[in-house]
Length: 638
Image (cartoon, rainbow, N blue to C red; front, side, top):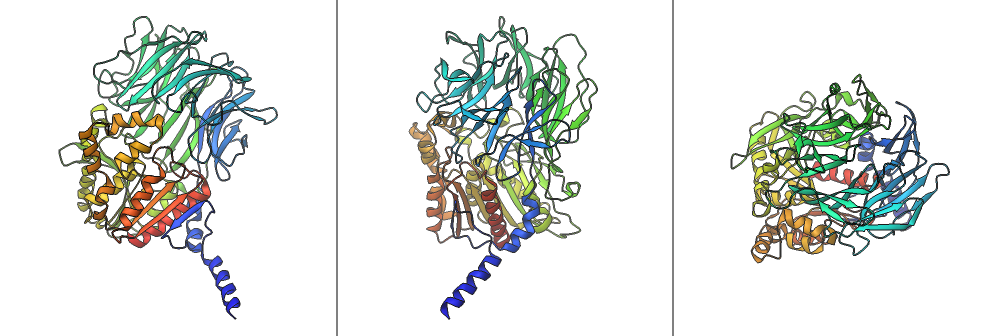
Protein backbone atom coordinates (compact mmCIF):
# COMPACT_ATOMS: atom_id res chain seq x y z
CA UNK A 1 0.00 0.00 0.00
CA UNK A 2 2.86 2.35 0.82
CA UNK A 3 4.38 1.88 -2.65
CA UNK A 4 1.09 2.62 -4.34
CA UNK A 5 0.68 5.88 -2.44
CA UNK A 6 4.24 6.90 -3.22
CA UNK A 7 3.78 6.21 -6.92
CA UNK A 8 0.50 8.08 -7.03
CA UNK A 9 2.15 11.06 -5.31
CA UNK A 10 4.88 11.17 -7.95
CA UNK A 11 2.31 11.10 -10.72
CA UNK A 12 0.44 14.05 -9.22
CA UNK A 13 3.71 15.92 -8.63
CA UNK A 14 4.72 15.57 -12.27
CA UNK A 15 1.38 17.03 -13.27
CA UNK A 16 1.69 20.13 -11.11
CA UNK A 17 5.42 20.93 -10.99
CA UNK A 18 7.65 22.44 -13.68
CA UNK A 19 10.77 20.26 -14.18
CA UNK A 20 13.96 21.74 -12.80
CA UNK A 21 16.97 21.80 -15.19
CA UNK A 22 19.67 19.51 -13.80
CA UNK A 23 22.22 22.33 -13.89
CA UNK A 24 20.28 24.39 -11.33
CA UNK A 25 20.80 24.26 -7.55
CA UNK A 26 17.79 25.49 -5.53
CA UNK A 27 17.47 26.40 -1.88
CA UNK A 28 14.23 27.55 -0.29
CA UNK A 29 12.40 27.77 -3.63
CA UNK A 30 9.06 25.95 -3.73
CA UNK A 31 8.16 23.87 -6.79
CA UNK A 32 7.07 25.92 -9.79
CA UNK A 33 3.49 24.91 -10.71
CA UNK A 34 3.08 23.64 -14.23
CA UNK A 35 0.05 25.91 -14.46
CA UNK A 36 2.29 28.95 -14.05
CA UNK A 37 4.52 27.73 -16.86
CA UNK A 38 1.47 27.25 -19.06
CA UNK A 39 0.21 30.75 -18.29
CA UNK A 40 3.59 32.40 -18.81
CA UNK A 41 4.65 30.31 -21.80
CA UNK A 42 3.77 32.95 -24.42
CA UNK A 43 6.01 35.47 -22.68
CA UNK A 44 8.91 33.01 -22.56
CA UNK A 45 8.83 32.46 -26.30
CA UNK A 46 9.64 35.98 -27.47
CA UNK A 47 13.06 36.43 -29.07
CA UNK A 48 15.02 38.95 -31.08
CA UNK A 49 17.55 39.14 -33.89
CA UNK A 50 20.75 41.21 -33.81
CA UNK A 51 22.39 42.54 -36.96
CA UNK A 52 26.08 41.55 -37.02
CA UNK A 53 27.25 42.59 -40.48
CA UNK A 54 26.94 42.49 -44.26
CA UNK A 55 28.28 39.91 -46.67
CA UNK A 56 31.02 41.66 -48.72
CA UNK A 57 29.83 40.39 -52.12
CA UNK A 58 26.09 39.88 -51.78
CA UNK A 59 23.21 41.82 -50.30
CA UNK A 60 23.03 39.42 -47.36
CA UNK A 61 23.08 39.89 -43.60
CA UNK A 62 24.64 37.95 -40.75
CA UNK A 63 22.42 37.97 -37.67
CA UNK A 64 22.34 36.33 -34.24
CA UNK A 65 19.06 34.84 -33.08
CA UNK A 66 17.75 31.94 -31.03
CA UNK A 67 15.65 29.08 -32.35
CA UNK A 68 16.50 26.55 -29.62
CA UNK A 69 18.25 27.14 -26.28
CA UNK A 70 20.95 29.66 -27.20
CA UNK A 71 21.59 32.46 -29.75
CA UNK A 72 23.43 31.25 -32.85
CA UNK A 73 24.59 32.75 -36.17
CA UNK A 74 22.17 32.88 -39.10
CA UNK A 75 22.35 34.23 -42.65
CA UNK A 76 19.45 36.24 -44.09
CA UNK A 77 19.61 36.66 -47.87
CA UNK A 78 16.79 39.17 -48.36
CA UNK A 79 14.39 41.29 -46.31
CA UNK A 80 11.88 38.94 -44.75
CA UNK A 81 13.88 35.92 -45.89
CA UNK A 82 14.40 32.72 -43.94
CA UNK A 83 17.08 32.72 -41.27
CA UNK A 84 19.53 30.02 -42.37
CA UNK A 85 21.30 28.70 -39.28
CA UNK A 86 25.10 28.56 -39.54
CA UNK A 87 26.24 27.52 -36.03
CA UNK A 88 24.80 24.79 -33.81
CA UNK A 89 26.30 24.94 -30.31
CA UNK A 90 24.96 24.40 -26.82
CA UNK A 91 26.77 27.57 -25.76
CA UNK A 92 25.74 31.04 -27.04
CA UNK A 93 27.66 32.55 -29.94
CA UNK A 94 28.58 36.09 -28.88
CA UNK A 95 29.28 37.79 -32.21
CA UNK A 96 30.67 37.30 -35.69
CA UNK A 97 31.49 38.79 -39.05
CA UNK A 98 32.12 37.76 -42.66
CA UNK A 99 35.63 37.83 -44.07
CA UNK A 100 36.05 41.04 -46.10
CA UNK A 101 36.42 40.87 -49.89
CA UNK A 102 35.63 37.16 -50.29
CA UNK A 103 33.10 36.31 -47.58
CA UNK A 104 33.86 32.57 -47.72
CA UNK A 105 34.17 32.28 -43.94
CA UNK A 106 32.90 33.84 -40.72
CA UNK A 107 34.92 34.60 -37.60
CA UNK A 108 32.90 34.31 -34.39
CA UNK A 109 33.37 34.33 -30.62
CA UNK A 110 32.18 31.82 -28.02
CA UNK A 111 32.88 30.92 -24.39
CA UNK A 112 31.95 27.94 -22.23
CA UNK A 113 29.59 27.98 -19.27
CA UNK A 114 29.46 31.75 -19.05
CA UNK A 115 33.10 32.00 -17.93
CA UNK A 116 33.84 34.75 -20.49
CA UNK A 117 37.12 33.18 -21.58
CA UNK A 118 36.10 33.92 -25.15
CA UNK A 119 37.73 32.05 -28.01
CA UNK A 120 37.78 33.02 -31.69
CA UNK A 121 36.71 30.50 -34.33
CA UNK A 122 36.66 30.32 -38.13
CA UNK A 123 33.53 28.91 -39.72
CA UNK A 124 34.02 27.77 -43.33
CA UNK A 125 30.70 28.31 -45.08
CA UNK A 126 31.37 25.77 -47.84
CA UNK A 127 31.41 22.75 -45.52
CA UNK A 128 30.32 24.10 -42.11
CA UNK A 129 33.64 23.15 -40.52
CA UNK A 130 34.70 25.14 -37.43
CA UNK A 131 38.35 25.79 -36.52
CA UNK A 132 39.59 27.13 -33.18
CA UNK A 133 41.91 30.10 -33.82
CA UNK A 134 42.99 30.97 -30.27
CA UNK A 135 44.56 28.90 -27.49
CA UNK A 136 41.32 27.61 -25.95
CA UNK A 137 41.89 28.89 -22.40
CA UNK A 138 42.72 32.63 -22.40
CA UNK A 139 40.33 35.56 -22.84
CA UNK A 140 40.25 36.88 -26.42
CA UNK A 141 38.28 39.92 -27.55
CA UNK A 142 37.79 41.77 -30.81
CA UNK A 143 38.54 40.23 -34.12
CA UNK A 144 39.10 43.23 -36.41
CA UNK A 145 39.72 42.37 -40.06
CA UNK A 146 42.36 44.05 -42.18
CA UNK A 147 40.90 45.75 -45.24
CA UNK A 148 42.15 43.00 -47.57
CA UNK A 149 40.65 40.27 -45.38
CA UNK A 150 43.94 38.49 -44.84
CA UNK A 151 44.62 39.21 -41.17
CA UNK A 152 42.72 39.52 -37.93
CA UNK A 153 43.74 41.69 -34.97
CA UNK A 154 42.47 40.95 -31.47
CA UNK A 155 43.27 41.43 -27.77
CA UNK A 156 44.22 38.47 -25.58
CA UNK A 157 45.29 37.62 -22.02
CA UNK A 158 47.25 34.58 -23.24
CA UNK A 159 50.59 35.97 -21.98
CA UNK A 160 49.78 36.16 -18.27
CA UNK A 161 46.01 35.84 -17.81
CA UNK A 162 45.69 39.51 -16.81
CA UNK A 163 46.89 42.01 -19.42
CA UNK A 164 45.19 42.41 -22.81
CA UNK A 165 47.98 42.29 -25.43
CA UNK A 166 47.39 42.86 -29.14
CA UNK A 167 47.85 39.93 -31.51
CA UNK A 168 47.49 39.39 -35.26
CA UNK A 169 46.80 36.14 -37.07
CA UNK A 170 45.96 34.82 -40.50
CA UNK A 171 42.74 32.81 -40.02
CA UNK A 172 44.01 30.29 -42.57
CA UNK A 173 47.20 29.70 -40.55
CA UNK A 174 46.27 30.46 -36.91
CA UNK A 175 49.34 28.74 -35.45
CA UNK A 176 51.53 31.51 -36.92
CA UNK A 177 49.90 34.28 -34.88
CA UNK A 178 52.05 37.29 -34.07
CA UNK A 179 52.29 39.32 -30.87
CA UNK A 180 52.17 42.98 -31.90
CA UNK A 181 52.56 44.68 -28.53
CA UNK A 182 52.42 43.88 -24.85
CA UNK A 183 50.15 46.09 -22.77
CA UNK A 184 49.50 46.70 -19.11
CA UNK A 185 45.89 46.41 -18.00
CA UNK A 186 42.69 44.71 -19.07
CA UNK A 187 41.14 47.56 -21.04
CA UNK A 188 43.01 47.32 -24.36
CA UNK A 189 41.36 46.55 -27.70
CA UNK A 190 42.10 46.61 -31.43
CA UNK A 191 39.80 49.15 -33.15
CA UNK A 192 40.80 49.34 -36.80
CA UNK A 193 43.48 48.66 -39.41
CA UNK A 194 45.03 51.38 -41.52
CA UNK A 195 44.13 51.05 -45.22
CA UNK A 196 47.67 49.89 -46.09
CA UNK A 197 47.60 47.23 -43.35
CA UNK A 198 50.78 48.49 -41.68
CA UNK A 199 49.26 50.07 -38.55
CA UNK A 200 46.60 49.35 -35.98
CA UNK A 201 44.43 51.82 -34.09
CA UNK A 202 44.19 50.72 -30.46
CA UNK A 203 41.85 51.71 -27.64
CA UNK A 204 42.85 51.86 -23.98
CA UNK A 205 39.86 51.91 -21.63
CA UNK A 206 40.69 53.27 -18.17
CA UNK A 207 37.20 54.00 -16.86
CA UNK A 208 33.79 55.13 -18.07
CA UNK A 209 35.18 58.68 -17.94
CA UNK A 210 38.62 58.09 -19.44
CA UNK A 211 39.97 56.29 -22.49
CA UNK A 212 42.82 56.82 -24.94
CA UNK A 213 43.76 56.03 -28.53
CA UNK A 214 47.12 54.63 -29.64
CA UNK A 215 48.77 53.82 -32.96
CA UNK A 216 50.82 50.62 -33.29
CA UNK A 217 53.13 49.52 -36.11
CA UNK A 218 52.22 45.92 -36.88
CA UNK A 219 55.70 44.82 -38.02
CA UNK A 220 57.74 46.37 -35.22
CA UNK A 221 55.17 46.58 -32.43
CA UNK A 222 56.17 50.21 -31.81
CA UNK A 223 53.33 52.02 -30.10
CA UNK A 224 52.61 55.74 -29.84
CA UNK A 225 49.91 57.67 -28.04
CA UNK A 226 47.48 59.70 -30.19
CA UNK A 227 45.61 61.36 -27.35
CA UNK A 228 47.34 63.42 -24.66
CA UNK A 229 48.10 62.07 -21.19
CA UNK A 230 47.26 64.06 -18.09
CA UNK A 231 44.68 66.78 -17.69
CA UNK A 232 40.97 66.19 -17.11
CA UNK A 233 39.79 62.69 -18.05
CA UNK A 234 38.31 62.33 -21.54
CA UNK A 235 36.20 59.46 -22.83
CA UNK A 236 36.87 58.47 -26.43
CA UNK A 237 35.59 55.66 -28.58
CA UNK A 238 34.87 54.13 -31.95
CA UNK A 239 38.15 54.99 -33.65
CA UNK A 240 38.07 54.37 -37.42
CA UNK A 241 40.57 55.22 -40.17
CA UNK A 242 39.48 57.37 -43.08
CA UNK A 243 40.16 55.71 -46.49
CA UNK A 244 43.14 58.04 -46.93
CA UNK A 245 44.81 56.69 -43.78
CA UNK A 246 45.79 60.25 -42.86
CA UNK A 247 43.01 60.83 -40.33
CA UNK A 248 40.70 58.97 -38.00
CA UNK A 249 37.12 59.44 -36.93
CA UNK A 250 36.18 59.04 -33.27
CA UNK A 251 33.86 60.15 -30.50
CA UNK A 252 35.10 62.33 -27.64
CA UNK A 253 33.65 64.33 -24.76
CA UNK A 254 36.67 66.61 -24.42
CA UNK A 255 34.73 69.61 -25.75
CA UNK A 256 31.75 69.33 -23.40
CA UNK A 257 29.47 67.08 -21.39
CA UNK A 258 28.61 64.70 -24.23
CA UNK A 259 30.51 62.53 -26.70
CA UNK A 260 30.67 64.30 -30.04
CA UNK A 261 31.54 62.69 -33.34
CA UNK A 262 34.64 64.21 -34.89
CA UNK A 263 37.88 63.74 -36.78
CA UNK A 264 41.58 63.88 -35.99
CA UNK A 265 44.46 64.01 -38.46
CA UNK A 266 47.44 61.88 -37.52
CA UNK A 267 49.71 64.84 -38.24
CA UNK A 268 47.90 67.43 -36.14
CA UNK A 269 46.27 65.13 -33.53
CA UNK A 270 43.60 67.63 -32.59
CA UNK A 271 39.96 66.67 -32.22
CA UNK A 272 37.62 68.57 -34.52
CA UNK A 273 33.91 67.93 -33.83
CA UNK A 274 31.39 67.25 -36.57
CA UNK A 275 28.31 67.19 -34.31
CA UNK A 276 28.97 70.08 -31.95
CA UNK A 277 25.34 71.19 -32.13
CA UNK A 278 23.93 67.95 -30.63
CA UNK A 279 23.52 67.99 -26.82
CA UNK A 280 23.53 64.20 -26.47
CA UNK A 281 26.04 61.36 -26.73
CA UNK A 282 26.98 59.94 -30.11
CA UNK A 283 27.19 56.29 -29.10
CA UNK A 284 28.05 54.55 -32.36
CA UNK A 285 29.04 55.27 -35.95
CA UNK A 286 30.52 53.82 -39.12
CA UNK A 287 32.38 55.27 -42.10
CA UNK A 288 31.08 54.77 -45.64
CA UNK A 289 33.45 52.78 -47.89
CA UNK A 290 34.39 55.89 -49.89
CA UNK A 291 34.81 57.95 -46.70
CA UNK A 292 32.34 60.64 -47.80
CA UNK A 293 29.75 60.05 -45.08
CA UNK A 294 29.39 58.88 -41.53
CA UNK A 295 26.28 57.13 -40.24
CA UNK A 296 25.92 57.71 -36.51
CA UNK A 297 23.50 57.11 -33.64
CA UNK A 298 22.53 59.66 -30.97
CA UNK A 299 21.39 58.61 -27.51
CA UNK A 300 18.68 61.21 -26.93
CA UNK A 301 17.36 60.79 -23.38
CA UNK A 302 17.54 57.02 -23.78
CA UNK A 303 16.03 56.81 -27.27
CA UNK A 304 18.11 56.54 -30.46
CA UNK A 305 18.28 58.73 -33.53
CA UNK A 306 20.05 57.61 -36.72
CA UNK A 307 21.75 60.47 -38.57
CA UNK A 308 24.27 61.08 -41.38
CA UNK A 309 27.02 63.65 -41.72
CA UNK A 310 29.29 64.44 -44.66
CA UNK A 311 33.05 64.44 -44.16
CA UNK A 312 33.66 66.84 -47.06
CA UNK A 313 31.57 69.27 -49.09
CA UNK A 314 28.79 66.87 -50.05
CA UNK A 315 25.27 67.36 -48.71
CA UNK A 316 24.57 64.84 -45.96
CA UNK A 317 21.82 62.25 -46.50
CA UNK A 318 18.58 63.04 -44.73
CA UNK A 319 17.79 61.34 -41.44
CA UNK A 320 15.41 58.41 -41.89
CA UNK A 321 11.98 58.45 -40.25
CA UNK A 322 12.08 55.84 -37.50
CA UNK A 323 9.79 55.17 -34.54
CA UNK A 324 11.02 55.77 -30.96
CA UNK A 325 13.47 52.94 -30.45
CA UNK A 326 17.00 51.93 -29.46
CA UNK A 327 19.49 51.36 -32.30
CA UNK A 328 22.85 49.60 -32.25
CA UNK A 329 25.44 47.97 -34.50
CA UNK A 330 25.48 50.48 -37.36
CA UNK A 331 27.47 49.26 -40.39
CA UNK A 332 27.72 50.30 -44.05
CA UNK A 333 27.51 47.61 -46.72
CA UNK A 334 30.65 47.10 -48.82
CA UNK A 335 29.10 48.87 -51.83
CA UNK A 336 27.92 51.83 -49.75
CA UNK A 337 24.31 51.30 -50.82
CA UNK A 338 22.87 50.51 -47.39
CA UNK A 339 23.41 50.90 -43.66
CA UNK A 340 22.48 47.96 -41.46
CA UNK A 341 21.57 48.11 -37.76
CA UNK A 342 19.61 46.48 -34.95
CA UNK A 343 16.51 48.21 -33.59
CA UNK A 344 14.17 47.51 -30.68
CA UNK A 345 11.36 49.38 -28.97
CA UNK A 346 8.80 48.84 -26.24
CA UNK A 347 6.44 47.28 -28.79
CA UNK A 348 9.01 45.56 -30.99
CA UNK A 349 11.57 42.81 -30.30
CA UNK A 350 15.09 43.49 -31.54
CA UNK A 351 15.34 42.98 -35.29
CA UNK A 352 17.76 43.61 -38.16
CA UNK A 353 17.03 46.63 -40.35
CA UNK A 354 18.66 48.58 -43.17
CA UNK A 355 18.47 52.14 -44.42
CA UNK A 356 19.05 53.45 -47.95
CA UNK A 357 21.18 56.57 -47.41
CA UNK A 358 20.00 58.10 -50.70
CA UNK A 359 16.25 57.77 -50.25
CA UNK A 360 16.08 57.41 -46.46
CA UNK A 361 13.88 54.33 -46.91
CA UNK A 362 14.16 51.82 -44.05
CA UNK A 363 13.64 48.08 -44.51
CA UNK A 364 13.00 45.44 -41.89
CA UNK A 365 14.97 42.27 -42.62
CA UNK A 366 13.77 40.09 -39.75
CA UNK A 367 10.48 39.97 -37.89
CA UNK A 368 11.02 38.32 -34.55
CA UNK A 369 8.27 36.56 -32.67
CA UNK A 370 6.64 37.55 -29.38
CA UNK A 371 4.98 34.27 -28.45
CA UNK A 372 2.06 34.98 -30.75
CA UNK A 373 1.04 38.09 -28.83
CA UNK A 374 0.04 41.38 -30.41
CA UNK A 375 2.93 43.66 -29.44
CA UNK A 376 0.94 46.73 -30.48
CA UNK A 377 -0.98 46.24 -27.23
CA UNK A 378 2.16 46.32 -25.08
CA UNK A 379 2.75 49.30 -22.80
CA UNK A 380 4.84 52.26 -23.93
CA UNK A 381 6.86 53.78 -21.06
CA UNK A 382 6.44 57.20 -19.53
CA UNK A 383 9.62 59.19 -18.93
CA UNK A 384 9.68 60.38 -15.31
CA UNK A 385 11.93 63.21 -14.15
CA UNK A 386 12.58 64.25 -10.58
CA UNK A 387 15.05 65.86 -8.22
CA UNK A 388 17.04 63.72 -5.81
CA UNK A 389 18.02 64.48 -2.21
CA UNK A 390 20.65 67.05 -3.22
CA UNK A 391 18.82 68.62 -6.15
CA UNK A 392 20.47 66.50 -8.86
CA UNK A 393 18.05 65.71 -11.69
CA UNK A 394 17.46 61.98 -12.27
CA UNK A 395 15.05 60.21 -14.58
CA UNK A 396 13.66 56.81 -15.47
CA UNK A 397 11.05 54.91 -17.43
CA UNK A 398 7.71 53.88 -15.92
CA UNK A 399 5.53 51.14 -17.43
CA UNK A 400 2.03 51.17 -15.95
CA UNK A 401 -0.53 48.33 -16.30
CA UNK A 402 -3.80 48.91 -18.10
CA UNK A 403 -6.00 50.70 -15.56
CA UNK A 404 -9.19 49.31 -17.07
CA UNK A 405 -7.94 45.78 -16.38
CA UNK A 406 -6.13 46.58 -13.12
CA UNK A 407 -7.87 49.57 -11.51
CA UNK A 408 -6.57 51.35 -8.45
CA UNK A 409 -3.06 51.62 -6.99
CA UNK A 410 -0.79 48.88 -8.33
CA UNK A 411 2.31 47.22 -6.87
CA UNK A 412 5.61 48.54 -8.24
CA UNK A 413 8.79 46.66 -9.12
CA UNK A 414 11.87 48.91 -9.31
CA UNK A 415 14.42 47.39 -11.72
CA UNK A 416 17.94 48.82 -11.36
CA UNK A 417 20.47 48.46 -14.19
CA UNK A 418 24.04 47.31 -13.79
CA UNK A 419 27.31 48.83 -14.82
CA UNK A 420 27.19 51.04 -12.80
CA UNK A 421 27.64 53.03 -16.00
CA UNK A 422 24.74 51.26 -17.71
CA UNK A 423 21.49 52.91 -18.74
CA UNK A 424 17.88 51.78 -18.64
CA UNK A 425 16.33 52.44 -22.04
CA UNK A 426 12.89 51.98 -23.63
CA UNK A 427 13.64 48.59 -25.18
CA UNK A 428 11.37 45.60 -25.68
CA UNK A 429 10.54 44.11 -22.29
CA UNK A 430 9.86 40.60 -23.57
CA UNK A 431 8.95 38.32 -20.68
CA UNK A 432 8.74 41.25 -18.28
CA UNK A 433 5.46 42.13 -19.95
CA UNK A 434 3.98 39.33 -17.82
CA UNK A 435 4.25 41.59 -14.77
CA UNK A 436 2.28 44.29 -16.56
CA UNK A 437 -0.29 42.24 -18.45
CA UNK A 438 -0.94 39.31 -16.09
CA UNK A 439 -0.02 40.50 -12.58
CA UNK A 440 -0.83 44.19 -12.88
CA UNK A 441 2.58 45.18 -11.50
CA UNK A 442 4.05 48.51 -12.63
CA UNK A 443 7.71 48.50 -13.69
CA UNK A 444 10.00 51.44 -12.89
CA UNK A 445 13.47 51.58 -14.44
CA UNK A 446 15.51 54.37 -12.80
CA UNK A 447 18.66 55.93 -14.20
CA UNK A 448 20.42 56.92 -11.01
CA UNK A 449 23.55 59.06 -10.93
CA UNK A 450 26.44 57.25 -12.55
CA UNK A 451 24.31 56.17 -15.51
CA UNK A 452 25.52 56.66 -19.06
CA UNK A 453 23.75 59.04 -21.43
CA UNK A 454 23.31 62.17 -19.32
CA UNK A 455 26.73 63.78 -19.52
CA UNK A 456 30.16 63.06 -18.10
CA UNK A 457 29.57 65.01 -14.89
CA UNK A 458 26.47 62.94 -14.10
CA UNK A 459 28.43 59.79 -14.95
CA UNK A 460 31.06 60.57 -12.29
CA UNK A 461 28.66 61.52 -9.49
CA UNK A 462 28.77 58.07 -7.85
CA UNK A 463 32.52 57.48 -7.96
CA UNK A 464 34.59 56.62 -4.90
CA UNK A 465 33.26 58.02 -1.62
CA UNK A 466 30.01 59.11 -3.33
CA UNK A 467 28.92 55.52 -3.95
CA UNK A 468 25.86 55.61 -1.72
CA UNK A 469 24.55 58.81 -3.30
CA UNK A 470 23.18 56.57 -6.04
CA UNK A 471 21.36 54.53 -3.39
CA UNK A 472 19.82 57.76 -2.10
CA UNK A 473 18.48 58.35 -5.61
CA UNK A 474 16.31 55.26 -5.09
CA UNK A 475 14.80 57.09 -2.13
CA UNK A 476 13.80 59.88 -4.52
CA UNK A 477 12.04 57.35 -6.76
CA UNK A 478 10.23 55.94 -3.73
CA UNK A 479 9.09 59.50 -2.97
CA UNK A 480 7.89 59.78 -6.56
CA UNK A 481 5.85 56.58 -6.22
CA UNK A 482 4.12 58.09 -3.18
CA UNK A 483 2.97 61.05 -5.32
CA UNK A 484 1.10 58.67 -7.69
CA UNK A 485 -1.17 57.00 -5.14
CA UNK A 486 -4.04 56.89 -7.62
CA UNK A 487 -2.15 54.38 -9.80
CA UNK A 488 0.90 53.23 -7.75
CA UNK A 489 0.86 51.65 -4.29
CA UNK A 490 3.78 52.90 -2.14
CA UNK A 491 3.06 50.14 0.38
CA UNK A 492 3.76 47.40 -2.18
CA UNK A 493 7.16 48.12 -3.74
CA UNK A 494 9.85 45.57 -4.56
CA UNK A 495 13.31 45.94 -6.06
CA UNK A 496 15.34 43.83 -8.50
CA UNK A 497 18.72 44.31 -10.15
CA UNK A 498 21.66 42.50 -11.71
CA UNK A 499 25.41 42.92 -11.19
CA UNK A 500 25.91 46.46 -9.84
CA UNK A 501 22.10 46.58 -9.84
CA UNK A 502 22.29 43.58 -7.50
CA UNK A 503 24.40 45.62 -5.09
CA UNK A 504 21.89 48.47 -5.42
CA UNK A 505 19.09 46.02 -4.60
CA UNK A 506 20.81 44.89 -1.41
CA UNK A 507 21.74 48.44 -0.42
CA UNK A 508 18.18 49.64 -1.06
CA UNK A 509 16.75 46.89 1.15
CA UNK A 510 19.09 48.07 3.90
CA UNK A 511 18.45 51.81 3.53
CA UNK A 512 14.70 51.59 2.88
CA UNK A 513 13.69 48.52 4.86
CA UNK A 514 10.41 50.16 5.90
CA UNK A 515 9.49 51.15 2.32
CA UNK A 516 10.35 47.98 0.36
CA UNK A 517 8.51 44.67 0.62
CA UNK A 518 11.10 42.34 -0.96
CA UNK A 519 14.04 42.17 -3.34
CA UNK A 520 15.81 40.02 -5.93
CA UNK A 521 19.61 40.26 -6.26
CA UNK A 522 21.01 38.77 -9.47
CA UNK A 523 24.81 38.23 -9.60
CA UNK A 524 25.21 41.22 -7.27
CA UNK A 525 28.17 42.52 -5.24
CA UNK A 526 27.67 41.87 -1.52
CA UNK A 527 31.02 42.99 -0.09
CA UNK A 528 33.29 45.45 -1.88
CA UNK A 529 36.50 44.11 -0.35
CA UNK A 530 35.87 40.46 -1.18
CA UNK A 531 34.60 41.44 -4.62
CA UNK A 532 37.78 43.34 -5.47
CA UNK A 533 39.91 40.53 -4.04
CA UNK A 534 38.18 37.79 -6.04
CA UNK A 535 37.06 39.33 -9.33
CA UNK A 536 39.09 38.27 -12.37
CA UNK A 537 42.61 39.68 -12.58
CA UNK A 538 42.01 41.44 -15.90
CA UNK A 539 39.13 43.42 -14.35
CA UNK A 540 40.49 44.41 -10.94
CA UNK A 541 42.29 47.65 -11.81
CA UNK A 542 39.43 48.76 -14.06
CA UNK A 543 36.99 48.32 -11.17
CA UNK A 544 39.26 50.11 -8.71
CA UNK A 545 39.03 53.26 -10.83
CA UNK A 546 35.24 53.20 -10.54
CA UNK A 547 34.67 51.88 -7.02
CA UNK A 548 37.84 52.88 -5.17
CA UNK A 549 41.23 51.32 -4.49
CA UNK A 550 40.98 49.03 -1.47
CA UNK A 551 44.77 49.13 -1.04
CA UNK A 552 44.28 52.58 0.48
CA UNK A 553 43.33 51.92 4.15
CA UNK A 554 40.88 54.84 4.26
CA UNK A 555 39.12 53.68 1.12
CA UNK A 556 39.14 50.08 2.36
CA UNK A 557 37.35 51.13 5.52
CA UNK A 558 34.80 53.11 3.52
CA UNK A 559 34.14 50.19 1.18
CA UNK A 560 33.75 47.87 4.15
CA UNK A 561 31.32 50.28 5.79
CA UNK A 562 28.95 50.30 2.80
CA UNK A 563 29.12 46.56 2.07
CA UNK A 564 25.74 44.81 2.34
CA UNK A 565 27.21 41.84 4.24
CA UNK A 566 28.21 44.22 7.05
CA UNK A 567 24.60 45.39 7.38
CA UNK A 568 22.87 42.10 6.58
CA UNK A 569 21.12 42.13 9.97
CA UNK A 570 19.05 45.06 8.71
CA UNK A 571 17.59 43.06 5.82
CA UNK A 572 14.29 41.73 7.15
CA UNK A 573 12.44 41.61 3.84
CA UNK A 574 12.25 38.34 1.87
CA UNK A 575 15.20 38.07 -0.52
CA UNK A 576 15.84 36.07 -3.70
CA UNK A 577 19.48 35.64 -4.77
CA UNK A 578 20.45 34.32 -8.22
CA UNK A 579 24.02 33.43 -9.24
CA UNK A 580 26.04 31.70 -11.94
CA UNK A 581 28.80 29.40 -10.68
CA UNK A 582 31.26 30.45 -13.40
CA UNK A 583 30.82 34.22 -13.07
CA UNK A 584 34.22 35.87 -13.72
CA UNK A 585 33.00 39.34 -12.75
CA UNK A 586 31.06 38.86 -9.51
CA UNK A 587 32.27 35.54 -8.09
CA UNK A 588 30.01 32.86 -6.64
CA UNK A 589 31.32 33.65 -3.16
CA UNK A 590 29.54 37.04 -3.23
CA UNK A 591 26.17 35.29 -3.41
CA UNK A 592 27.00 32.52 -0.96
CA UNK A 593 28.19 34.86 1.79
CA UNK A 594 25.10 37.04 1.39
CA UNK A 595 22.75 34.06 1.58
CA UNK A 596 24.45 32.93 4.79
CA UNK A 597 24.46 36.42 6.36
CA UNK A 598 20.78 37.16 5.69
CA UNK A 599 19.59 33.72 6.74
CA UNK A 600 21.35 34.28 10.05
CA UNK A 601 18.65 36.90 10.73
CA UNK A 602 15.92 34.37 10.26
CA UNK A 603 14.97 36.21 7.05
CA UNK A 604 13.61 33.96 4.30
CA UNK A 605 16.04 33.67 1.38
CA UNK A 606 15.45 31.88 -1.91
CA UNK A 607 18.69 30.90 -3.65
CA UNK A 608 19.13 29.76 -7.25
CA UNK A 609 22.55 28.84 -8.68
CA UNK A 610 23.37 27.55 -12.16
CA UNK A 611 26.45 25.37 -12.58
CA UNK A 612 26.70 26.13 -16.31
CA UNK A 613 26.22 29.91 -16.28
CA UNK A 614 28.27 33.00 -15.55
CA UNK A 615 27.28 36.65 -15.17
CA UNK A 616 23.57 36.06 -15.73
CA UNK A 617 21.66 33.17 -17.26
CA UNK A 618 22.16 32.87 -21.03
CA UNK A 619 20.63 29.45 -21.71
CA UNK A 620 16.89 29.50 -22.27
CA UNK A 621 15.98 26.57 -20.03
CA UNK A 622 17.84 28.17 -17.12
CA UNK A 623 16.52 31.66 -17.81
CA UNK A 624 12.96 30.32 -18.06
CA UNK A 625 13.17 28.63 -14.68
CA UNK A 626 14.74 31.73 -13.14
CA UNK A 627 11.92 33.89 -14.49
CA UNK A 628 9.15 31.55 -13.34
CA UNK A 629 10.57 31.27 -9.84
CA UNK A 630 10.99 35.06 -9.73
CA UNK A 631 7.33 35.45 -10.68
CA UNK A 632 6.42 33.16 -7.78
CA UNK A 633 8.62 35.16 -5.42
CA UNK A 634 7.08 38.53 -6.26
CA UNK A 635 3.56 37.12 -6.42
CA UNK A 636 4.01 35.85 -2.86
CA UNK A 637 5.82 38.80 -1.33
CA UNK A 638 4.83 41.84 -3.40
